[in-house]
Image 1 (cartoon, rainbow, N blue to C red):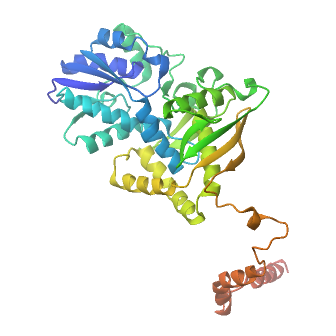
Image 2: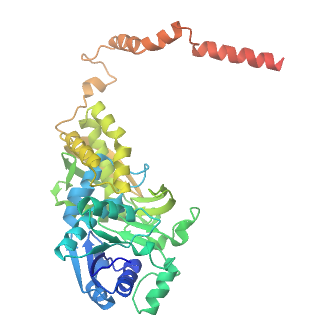
Image 3: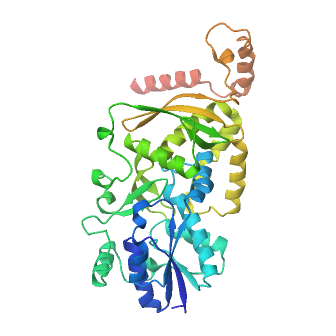
Length: 418
């Protein structure tokens, strides 16, 4: 076991890190500084300092990172249209690099020997934290208790907490792993480990069920500047406040629930349930605005990299050179993504009703089905013939046409039947 005199622990006050704080003190006999990043956990932060000190921490840092989280991380993912495996909006993934960054800063400030995190050896978060540590402080020692201690399950942790009088909210009846921030809430474990089981309604924190949502829809307008949301219904908001307001409104209408089985970076398939109300609306609105302001080839190129961008975020490569390169490209693509989008929220759905922009590339004169003087429909004939040239060349080189292939198949089937 490595010699350590001071550890900075990423501490949430939940089951895992509460037990870790006590275990690190016992196992390493060193000073443990607890650090909690406020990225929008809300009431979960209440009483945290008292609990950390009572469990053995020498002190607790609570760092308000909410504005930075939204402006630097959440909006970047929005502009990139980064959605992992077509469903997951990356709420947990986006919070980890900013949490790790400040943890490293505190470790350097405290002259600590090591940093520790509460991620399990099966999950993605261990990778996200430790890749960030390596990028920001290559020589730092990393302690990952889940990969060291004899405790093998959350039931073991609950028993350990009871033995050492550590107050925790998790129980063997509700052993869910919950992550909450300004962007989302996620739920894993317990009955959710059965991909056939319906998520219990009681677990949800940010959204009403669509069945219980208001009977009347709400229509709102979202304004963007260079791909960044700046106002709701004409009222300007700072980044954090805008997301908070939209979370509440969309959550009331049951918008933003996702239940998926995702592919973890370590190779395990995992079932997660997510609530992402505000960002679900913003993704829909942002995409609608891009549809009239972005050049076709620029949009298709950005979209072709969307899978890569989402994978880099999900897998923990926020501080990699390739991500920085792609982020600059995304920022350039958003120069003209300015304008307004009108959406309707109703019973779990977010529907785009309209979009407009001073930089719109949409032309009703070109798009109309009525008579016009700007588009000569006969031009399409030459366009189609040029695009069909290579297909005709293949046919002339002796390749079977579709008609010839079909005829040959019918002849063979008839011969077989005879």
